[in-house]
Length: 104
Image (cartoon, rainbow, N blue to C red; front, side, top):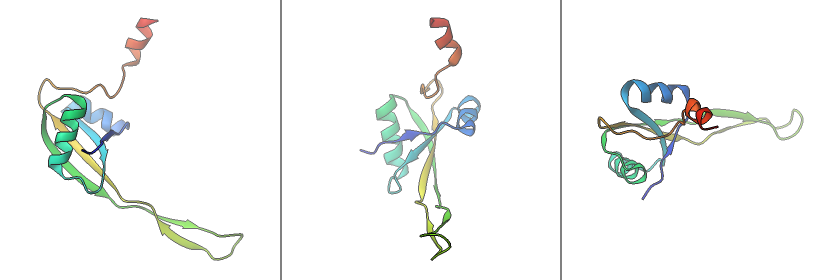
């Protein structure tokens, strides 16, 4: 079983409100069926669609010492999954700040 981690970004929050779509960070070797099963198992929801993309790692410059031997390396590639849930299903990824203030 794979572990999926939700992304907490402004775009992710907007997609949740507009299209009931959640964005997750997933392992590079995970396929759509495995992602759908993992989300359904971890969050007890019904998944209707999964879209995936691999984001290429950026090139990064580094230096070993002052002005000596500059070089470049590459960050790791990452994979994102856009998971659309069935109507009536939702995941509590973002806590509502107003609800927390009312409890106090």
